[in-house]
Length: 330
Image (cartoon, rainbow, N blue to C red; front, side, top):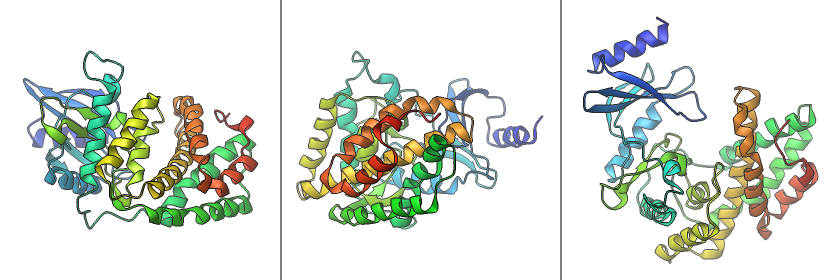
């Protein structure tokens, strides 16, 4: 038995799941793996987060915060932080992704209304003290993934340091615009693959939350961008319009123009990051299927860059990655 498997088997046995049937379920773009545990009528989820690449402590902290607010994060019944193993509440298989398009189950409008309502409530809550800031260094480092991975794959050579410097300078001209929107806890991967529909629960608890361990404190616009500019699927235009209007109607104190600027800016930052990440997943991690999403992510990025406030980064991208080179990285 491989060493890691022996550690997992001992952990499950110690916490009453030694005889459970184990079935792998889809994971995410990280090194974490998930298994559904079943024994009789009992169900749970095993998170396997190898400690050499992952740290489960942020997940535990943010899960506790979200549960304390009455949201449907998974409860945690057992944890071995040193080994990177958790046994989580099984919230079921009602992932938004599986339900979208099945109007006989629940409409897209109802799913996204509920997801927006949860953000409205979350953004009114105090932030946990341990959540790091989504500051200039973090935002620019993420945006740099476009330069670090996509451009080298396109050009067949590493990026020139001057290229990176001019790119960062363009972002530095834009980031002060985020000061026009309030800050709150940002879950960062708030989209259909990480949300579950729990119709037997009431109110905000109907939205199950996954993959929030990277939460930070930043602009309220970020998670709305994550939700509505989904890299993996196209939303109906009316869903996007309805969701933004619903959020702003619930927050009349927010200045709409400043919010729109932050939304476009963070959309551009996030989509530039995603293009770099999906290229890296292909090049470094041998996961080429992520390249199939790049045309959609480029469309999102081009939409964000159309905002007048984003002229500095639009000029840079138009010069260094003209439209005819915005494609799957070869």
